[in-house]
Image 1 (cartoon, helix red, strand yellow):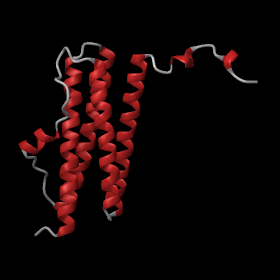
Image 2 (cartoon, rainbow, N blue to C red):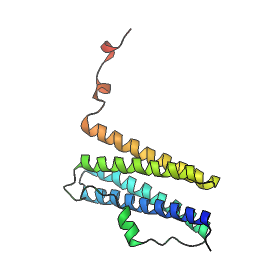
Image 3 (cartoon, rainbow, N blue to C red):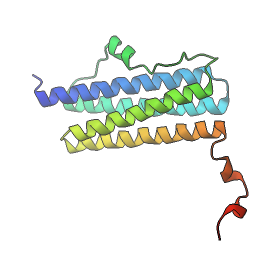
Image 4 (cartoon, helix red, strand yellow):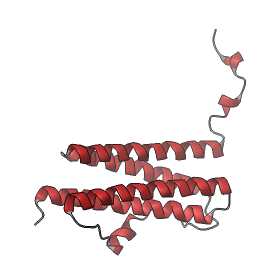
Length: 164
């Protein structure tokens, strides 16, 4: 019999697992579709990170409820990152914009869930996952900036512009 607190943990963990699967699959599809080897590797690494998060969360699910997580196809479909078709014509900027928004939402999700739970170990896990998602957000933002030439002035010899 699942009590109210366990039910809350189950919902949080299930939602988090579905999000990680959706992100993993999205990054994997981008990695498979793009031709640039460096970009392909970066998205593959993101996909692998999200898979690692899924494994951690499913481990917690097993630990807390003494059973394996079994996903529901509808829930998985709802967790997919949507917004652009992922194929060989997917633009790097479009993919990065969707991924940046998704990582920001993931960080917000984990942060808000961490505030809602009382178990210190589970809270710590959620805080760590929020931090990892923030790292992905920063990474993707830097990638977008490098493609758009953002922060180009760091490369300039701007010492003449500095005040004495």
